[in-house]
Length: 386
Ligand SMILES: Cc1cc2nc3c(=O)[nH]c(=O)nc-3n(C[C@H](O)[C@H](O)[C@H](O)COP(=O)(O)OP(=O)(O)OC[C@H]3O[C@@H](n4cnc5c(N)ncnc54)[C@H](O)[C@@H]3O)c2cc1C
Image 1 (cartoon, rainbow, N blue to C red):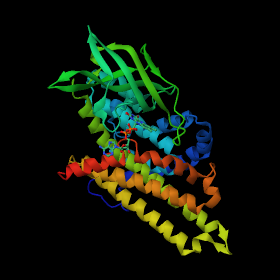
Image 2: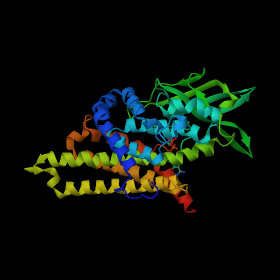
Image 3: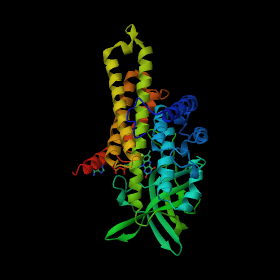
């Protein structure tokens, strides 16, 4: 992939993957999207379909049940799903890049062998528990504690807004917790918490503005006792390790956002060609045509940004700044395109059964989750030495 930065000349294996996922999105996902959105129901049948296709294992080696692909392959799949249904796309994104990836990157052999096959096959989901009521953008404000008691960690505290944390197939949540003090600072570590552990509770799901078919819960931990060996990675490296996971995840969120931005273009072209007003298709008006042309430009620029970030990451080069840029421009493109597409659809754009209205509600969170736009600007400025 690293030799190909052009969005128009993907190597064959990537193109085939994107086309296969596009077919799945159109034939399997699209027909049930409005229903799951309206009912706020988790799309188990769609998740099972993605599991059968191997999408949860895309960027993992075959020895862990994966498909032997790479992170860019995951991004292409997310872009195709994001065009049609952001809830489905975020379920895959969180399942892979937040659920399985921390164990692949930082787990020991035992942890990888125990957890990865179930997660990469899509038979089970894991959540990523970083955010707390007092620790969002400032994630170092973590208050959840884990205290060693004999051979066990005893965890107390709470997390909020955790994706994939309360489905029937959720088996694990990886949590950050304060495990002590080091050099006058909080020592933050990461611990694997099976959801069957007594004291762990996924509280009732949130009533969200969008991403209605994705699973999001507050979590509480009351004297949750897990074996000492459930520490993931080095003690005290939990925060740093999660930040690495978030850097990668931003490229995946950017890909999802590009899908949403492009989905709005595609829907708008079709509608503007069909909808008649004043004796002609509304797309014959330059005001509408230019709006759609600008939407296409936003999607294209955002796509080049995430391709660039993915290429740097796969080449083993620094990619933090590129990932933040991609996440910021892609989420803004999705939100701007969703707003413009809704306008093009007129009154229909305000009706929940139209996909553009779903994009309008869904896209806002893209500018907030996995680091707000302001956090991306902070990271970009920091990389510039400011
Ligand atoms: C649907 C959904 C799913 C999520 N999934 C997960 C998940 O799976 N795991 C997980 O750990 N978290 C998850 N999150 C949490 C998400 O990552 C946080 O909501 C996000 O990072 C923002 O944190 P916050 O909500 O505490 O906002 P705050 O940090 O309170 O920020 C509030 C506002 O202040 C701004 N701000 C804060 N500090 C500064 C500053 N220094 N300079 C300028 N502006 C600033 C922010 O940009 C924002 O606009 C999810 C959230 C949602 C809504």
